[in-house]
Image (tube, rainbow, N blue to C red; front, side, top):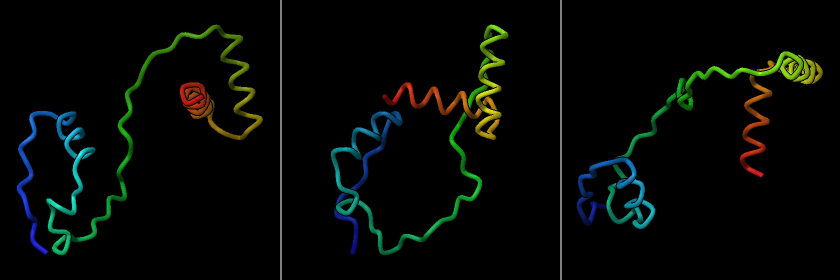
Length: 86
């Protein structure tokens, strides 16, 4: 199967995202020539920040993380994601 139309050039990732939300790739991409790719070291991009917390708050977080047997920084990330999702 040949691609029926040409994929436009995008000026930004946001423009490309909007395009693909409104179009089906089956109409634009020849998937018969696609090859499976493995990306074993792919990780979400992260950025370090400095966060000042009262000592007692940090100690409570560390105690909660210790009780769950997880690193306290990982627990903070989980709690932040839960709060933002709910």
